[in-house]
Image (cartoon, rainbow, N blue to C red):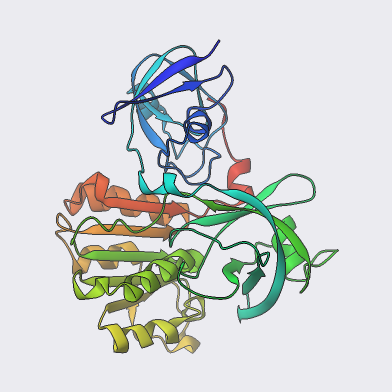
Length: 350
C-alpha cells in the first residue's frame, strides 16, 4: 500500500512506498525536487511538510536543526512518509529532462593542479553522448558499493573527457588511492563505474538578474562549468557576473590564471580571497572569509542570484548571512555543499 504525496505549489502528485524516501519516490516518478548529496548532509532538499507526518533517517543536525524540524521542515532525501503527505518544495522542471544513467568510464588522465588537488579526466563509452547541466555532479560506484560524489568541471558543450577536480582527503578510501597513498592506486586506463548526471545545481536562465558565483576550494569545479556555460551562450552580455573564490592560501586558487583570462576576455569581476596567508605567500589581495567579501561589496543582494559551492560551513554561512543581512530572497540562492564521507559519518538519527 503506497502513500500519496502532493507537492505545493505545483500540485504535482506521486506515490511513495512505505520505507521509501520522499526524494527517491519523486525522482522515480520523474518529478525532480531540489537535492544535492542525497545523504542528509547538505540541506539542498529541505522543504516543508504542510500536512501529514514523516520519519527522518540519519542526517546532519546542521542540515536540519531540531527547531526547524519542529517547525515542519524536512529533508526529503531521508524523510519517509507515515501516510499521505502534502509538502512544499520547488519542482526543478529542467532537470527532469535528463535522467541519470549508470555507465563505465575510463581514466583518461590524472594531472596535478596543486599539491593536494588532482584533475581527473574520464573518457565515456564512444556510444554515450553525455547530456547534463553545467554544475551537476557524478558519483563513482566503488567495488564495495559505496559512492563518492564529484562535480563536473567542464560545461556540456565542451568536447572531450569529463573533468573533475579532486582534493586529497587523507585517510579517504578513494582519494588516498587516487593520490597514491593506498593500494591499489587509481591509475590511467582504469575502468570506473559512474552514475551521471545528478543534482539540481545549475544556472537558471529564465531571468536577467546579475549573477554572483561563489566558491571555496574545489567548489570551484562546478562554478567553472557554470561560468564556461555563461560565456558559451553569451549570457554575460545580458547579466553581470561576479566571481568570488576563496582558499586558505593562494595555492588553493589552483586555476587563478584561467579566471584572470576570463576577466580579460569576458569582462567579468573576479575577487580572489585568502583566509590564512603566510608571510612567504606575498599575498596582497583580499583576506578573510570569502562570503563576507561578497557582503562588503554587495550589501544589497535583493536583485541578484547566487550560485555557491564549497565546504558546508561556507555555503551555510553564505545562505544565512545573505538572506538575513543582504536582502537576498531564499529562492535566489542555489548551492551545492561538498560533503565528504567523514561528514556523512557524523549524521544523527532523526
